[in-house]
Length: 120
Image 1 (cartoon, rainbow, N blue to C red):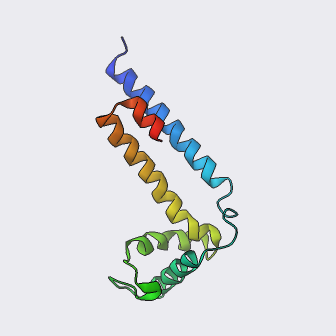
Image 2 (image 1 turned 90 degrees about the horizontal axis):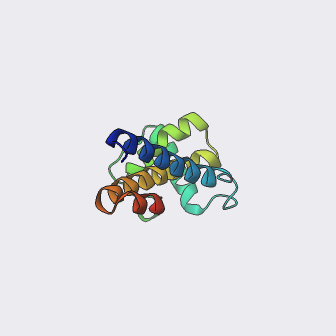
């Protein structure tokens, strides 16, 4: 019988492996797939540029309207990476990894560790 501490370490190792695999599979071609920027990515980058320029709002009217949380989340990526494809796609990538981790945590509690690892 495995102790609770050993079981927890084993779970953390497996979950970390799944998250690293997910990150690797997406990061391999993040700047190139899909090719070019979609119009929504360009619009989001423009809104982030406006935020960096001092325009702060609770709702942005561009592109039929946008709530600001995603755009404020994107600001540090554009500051650190510059104005390029990678900076436009990293916020969605990071939120995707957070979502995978959250779903795995939830399923581990409600459906067990095997279901959680399969979901990742």
